[in-house]
Image 1 (tube, rainbow, N blue to C red):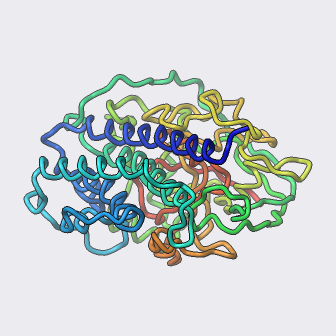
Image 2: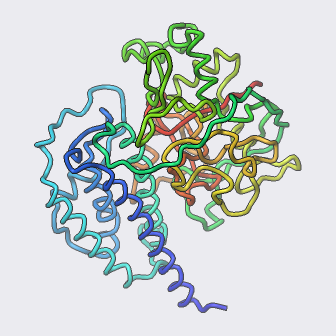
Length: 442
């Protein structure tokens, strides 16, 4: 049996291993960007790539440097410049020029100096130390998962970077099978537990607390995410031209922005290509379509169905016929590559029926990995929500009625964020994220 000191030492070693791995993930992303493209802006609503080179370390510094270690800033201007990202709220787009940003070398020096300073001090403090009423381990997990979230958001941002602006890599292109027919499965009425309890002692972001038990009436849900082939049928039926399929605000967005197809698709003669991270390939029929929530809602209306609520998605993913719930759709064993397309396994989606071992107790497949899934639930606090005092804007700034919950995970979602209570969210007109959907009937 380990002593208390040995447990603390083990925890610190485990965290260091995880931190090294997370840094490697983000460092690798910047290495696929050609040097001449580091000041590009692949997504109009987002910062230029150079911002994120400074942001990942600035976030760690602003969270830990002075608050935890009492260190004095060595570059206050950069601490502020690289502090915050951009949420794609409607309105004006950023209008800065590449020349407005610092040269690359000072940014790289700033980032390297922060890493050295934090690493030196991490070995000198107990993870049990209380910071703003929270153990240091909570702040360290915030820093770690923040970086891993950016390992995903940077990936979908770089996905929009032209192919000739990236250093190409060999990737797996799974062979497609015959197009899948839509299958719906009946989910009996039962409980769904959203969030988690603080008393469990496990890490979660502020919006994951407290746990809330919800009774979910019976419904039917698609066995698989909606595929490219199924979505193509919606497009062929004039889905983007029929205003009755779209809510008023969504139709206005579609019309104003001239949206006519998923952002990950590219017209090729009479057909379509999928715009992969490193190459364009014929549209994979059975891979999930990645679209905005507005597009997903229009499809579901065309199909005579609806998007699931957050509780319905939970019930289909984690519920058991006995009324109990599991940690993951497949049960309680830890995630592995045989159970889904997640934890940086692939750069692109794979067929939705590839991981039958990862199906839920009700037979619903591909619920973790291969693409987040839109719900119809507006992102808001669970009962008992308390803002993180050291990161007040993480959740509360988005309880505005304009963001919707997404559940599941994408190919670039880290394994630690596959926990049942994790909640993602975006605005309904944001096309760039690795997000698909499945439909329900009530």
